[in-house]
Amino acid sequence: MSVIAPRFKFSEFVKAIIENAFWIIVVTTLVGLPLAMIVLFYVDLPVIDGALVTPFLALTWLSHPELALPLLKSFLTSDAFRILAFPGFGFAALVAAGTIFVERKMLAKLQLRVGPFYCGKIEGILQLAGDGLKLISKEIIIPAKADKPLFIVAPLLFVGAAAAFVALIPVAPGWVVADVDVGLLAVFAVIGFFPIITVLSAWSANSKFPFIGGIRALYQMVSFEIPLILSCLGVVLLTGTLNLTEIAQSQAVIPWIVLMPIGAIVFFICMLAELERIPFDLPEAESEIVAGWLTEFSGMMYGLVQLGSYVKLYAFSALFVVLFLGGWSGPAFWPPLEESLLESGQELGPIRLQLPGLPLFSQEFFSAVIWFVLKTAAVIFFVLLPRGVFPRIRIDMLLRIGWYKLIALAFVNIFVALGLVYAGVVGPGGIF
Amino acid sequence: MADPAFLALSVLTIVSAIAALELRSLVYGAIALMGTLGGIAGFFLLLDSPFVAMFQIAVYVGSIAVLILFTVMLVRRELIFTKVEDPRRRLAGVGLMLVAMASLGAIVVHSGISGITTEEPAVDFRAIGADFLVRYWPALILMGLVLSGAVTGAMVLARREDTEDDQRAS
Image (tube, rainbow over all chains, first blue to last red; front, side, top):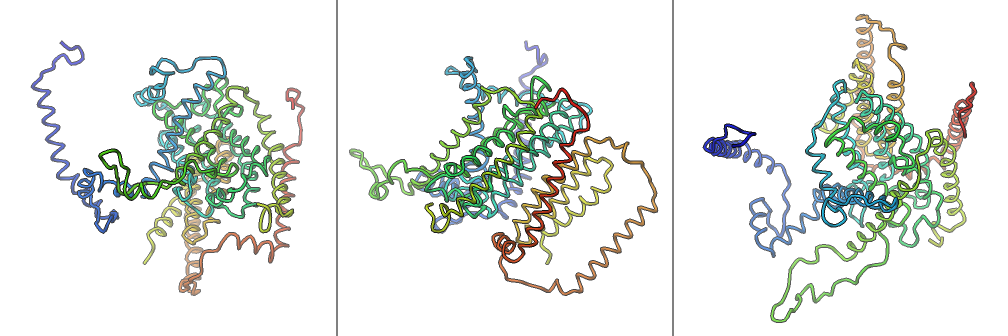
């Protein structure tokens, strides 16, 4: 006898299931299918080998590997794949998830602790999945006197702004969601939204700890945005473009960090401040103001903010790689595949293994992505490292660093760049 | 005839401008103001000048609106405003705006600007920079001097120490 449902009857259970199935079938046929048809009427379907790929044809092709491969290839080059999966949000969220786990384990090793250990047999590898499940299953509590619309929308806006940031980052030649001519300016326009979202969410929670944290975040982000922009100007001066793909391609010979180390250092410190990482984590100082502007968030709302901040961390690290570390440039990892392997396949004793339509990607693409991910992981490591080493600094020291030292150093960097141009080292007729 | 993007942007800009004026909550008014400024950035994008649009977003939405939000949150509203509700003033304001918009619209419609079609490509920001450095360099230098004077003045004002603060260690 169940305690949870004391009047449980099996016949009622079966009846409920049948009833639900009946209504699902009715609603799907009367509403769902016509709606799908109307949507399909307006969607541009791809044409592969002269055939218009309707969903029915696509399902037919999927059952046959030889026909499914061109379909997969066309999907991999579509805009939806770029936005959702590879250079876009999916990839960034994957890197962000990896970052969270690596951060916890690495900090534990730095501080001679164990870190997550029990979730999953090997080194607590399932801790992240456990945390995610916990956050999803928790109740979302909205404070009674909070400004509800703003409070609910703020985490979504935060993730959205982070995703917009990711969309501007090129990962490999031609692999970028939005290849805009004024990419670097667009990046700064997107970065400008973060303090607004932060302070609005802090205000809407109607509680003193979030409000103090939000005001601190606003101070910090607005004052470090200026040296951040100024430190990028050196790169723009040397390359003469604002397009991030062109900036990355201009460093095929030498990355700009070699010529402009001051700019790179200023950019890195400003990055730490914009990301609210230790030693600049005043907006979330847990020993002073609980959790800063995140205090009132609970459940998946907190999860969204956390996801957004780690996606933002990936995007900033990738921007550092694009601007100063040469983007995806680097020696090729392995030679291109032999032509005969592609045309006639591989002899494996009595059978011949051949898949038409391969390779899905060029060798340059793989090499570029591997280099980009390696460099980004290295930068992320250096972003995480101060958390295990440094204490938090005071707000007046923070503002002093931002307004006096970093802005002055950023100007020094601009003069270094100008000197490089006028000395003929970089530019037409120069060495690089 | 009318571009749907243009219509949507116009509606967004005008509605949020009215909301910015009319909303009781100052914070929501500031958000509506951001909508207006963002809509204007959208107009710049439609006019093929993404450079100006990005600066519009970065400067107006990202900085000016933040300043306004900051001020609204730190200042108590009751201290700076005394509520004067007068329907006649409101009507006069609306009427004045309608007259101004009608006259401006009449000027624009009859000036022949609506008949202009151009095949020129979008202006490159490098061309703007070259123009600044070659043709308009005196204006550029003057602007630079004025701006650096303003920054220096702001820093001097910010560094002024009226009160002794023994607890602050540098």
